[in-house]
Image (cartoon, rainbow, N blue to C red):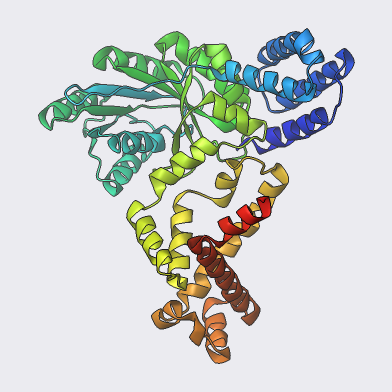
Length: 440
């Protein structure tokens, strides 16, 4: 997510923090580097110009120049202005138990509208909504079938009409929502590869018919300034409420995320961060600003953990650890829990202090996890529960069954023993006692 921009900004900030004293000249030089990084990230030129002017005006001030840590003060200003650029106020989507909330998703073909319909419905269902989807994209081949398939996988009803008439589909969807007492109706609308009069007329007519509570413009985050230009036209004709940025997990330069609020004056409400139905996040400008500057995003990491991890399994593991029980089966379960939170790269991006170089090595961590899974899966239940019986012949069989080698199996057993020992120390409070002794 925004890896290139983050890497550039990290480098600029590292150099800046090393400055014992700031002058007007080195502030301007820093601003030139930031301008270049933002333009290369495909941020709108006017947006970049205004941003740099605001930061520079604040930076060449008495408080920064006389500060004991001028570099940190300047970083703080850049961080605050990035938040301002993306919108301070968080967008709040309201749904009601006893009232139907209608949402339209609009945008160009390929922006990810259909997939995001499912993500949004799934996300709001977890918060108590009872969703139904209207398959109003009648132009893209297999769009209706795609939505129906995704809906079936998550047991979310999808309404369609064989007449292939958008107005009829909308009418049927409204009737179904009323009869089945659903309180959330999301309309998947048609898109084109480019702005098209027929497409715009269709969504404008649909808006007049269903009178949606919210219209979200869905933009592919990888398209940069192009997404901003298209958003401007959609906003002119539909006056949407907020923006959804998809594919933020891809090779995103950052142009759309940083430009769209300033140009359209509409906030970003949600972002898509992967292919799974759970890969959706509410947009927080302060957290995005921290990620861009390489400061991590610990709050999003905590929220992702709370949403993904099994509370019962965590409690069960705690009880086992209290009895000094930690087997390879427990080790395997913890890996599965970790995978639910997303890729190692996504998780590492949220940890403060993890730089772009470490992120580049994340792929190795993914491969390591797959290797560990293969090795443990090749063990019998008895071997997982009692690793002490893993003699030479058993290890050779496990290596052969997992497609690895003896060294990999031995390495895993060693890592497991180290983790078991560490958890035992934590359980007995030895680490805390040692720390207290050292402090005295």
